[in-house]
Amino acid sequence: MPVEFESVVTVSAAKQIADTLRAAIMDGRLKVDERLPTEEELAQRFKVSRPTVREALKRLAAQHLIRSRRGPTGGNFVASPAPEDAALSLANATTLMVAVGDIQLDDMATARLELEGVCCRLAAATRTDAQLDAMRTELARQRDVSLTDEEFCASDVRFHRALVDAAGNSLLSFLMHAVVEALQPVSNMIIFRVRERQAIVGFHERILHALESRDAEAGVAALADLVDYTRDRTRAALDRRAERVG
Image 1 (cartoon, helix red, strand yellow):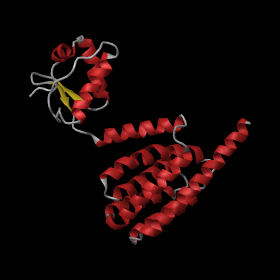
Image 2: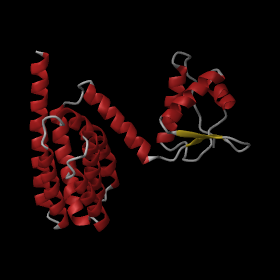
Image 3: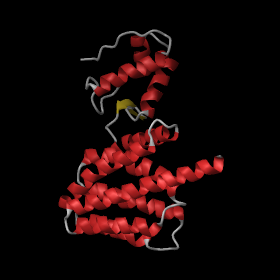
Image 4: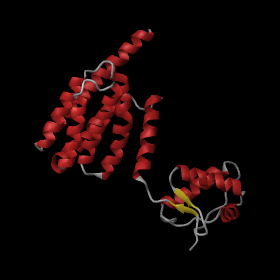
């Protein structure tokens, strides 16, 4: 049975159409891989022009809710959820919120400790040898004194990504994407001049050894010490910046 849509007013019509279609997708009235009506059909149903419909479809495509396919059997189809795209969108939004001050760095540190602490407990029980090897590889890189600051920060992110993956929980992995992929690089950018690499390496060694021995509490304790160190170094970096500005 065709999905029924109500007509919309012309002001911000493209947004209203996109919102209406998005709601139909989210509540299951439009199924994954289902073909949407043509632009002409949608224009008639919503009583708007085809360019307005086209703009609405562009909005949905930008949100990764629909995909286009060319050819005789082509058209616009409801997209299958892509966790990577959704996680990237979440990370980008989080980075922006930190940049404009909507998320405070102290809140960021608290959220990281609580969420990654859960991951650490799960990882102590579920980690695989391959995941431990990934963490060991990054730890070996971090001990290389010739590593640039950018390379060290990238390795830092990969280490914690491996820890999160070792938890074996897809929802936590999705949520932690915002912390590991967005907030951690922001934090690294602030503190890289005032932190000691060997201190970071030391915390990472403790976390890895805890996971190797399946000692969840030791891993969480090491993580807490790392977050406290990062929080302290962040404050020091911001104080130094304020002194220069003042």
